[in-house]
Image 1 (cartoon, rainbow, N blue to C red):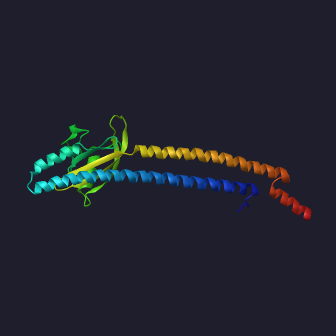
Image 2: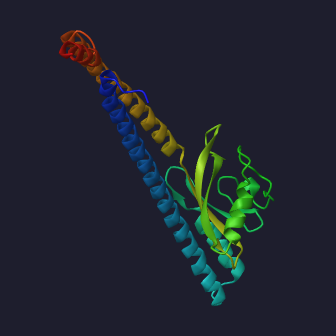
Image 3: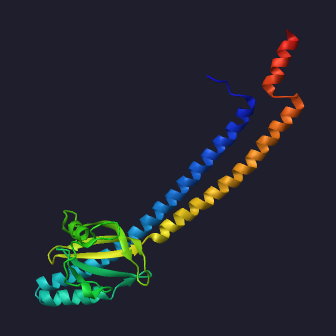
Length: 233
């Protein structure tokens, strides 16, 4: 095995420091990203829970005979249609058969079979929403690409699905998360620039130390040690 020279040993702390700096920085960036995702999920869960509470309350009134089920559903649709949150958040009702029942943003799709509809990545949005709502848990999160209002390019969207199975409804709330990814990549670029600057600074210091030792000893430390041994011999 080749012996590490003194010059190479001086570079080892630099390499180790840069590796540690990169690892710690990337860890914190990823941790911040996961935290923002968790916050976004919690916000969606709160909206979905509130919507489900409204539907359950009106359904209970229908069961109690205070109003008909059709009237309860009409009132529920009216209330849910008016719900807004965030910059462009709204609430959608989708049937278990992948047919939108009420979509405030795209009313022209109401009643259509969208089970074959896919996002740009081939993800069956409405089919998966129905599958999640029909599952034993009756709730879950889905991530897909959707066209943001006023935008020409689809953006990543995170949705929360909760079901009210007595009516066959899937209540869907969603928020775009492209801002989280943009912040994540911007942070990575900043770290790359910072590491590059630190690398240049530390490299200059190591080079200066190497040159100073070379001038003082008249050569590398290994050469000076070899000459000392020869003189001693």
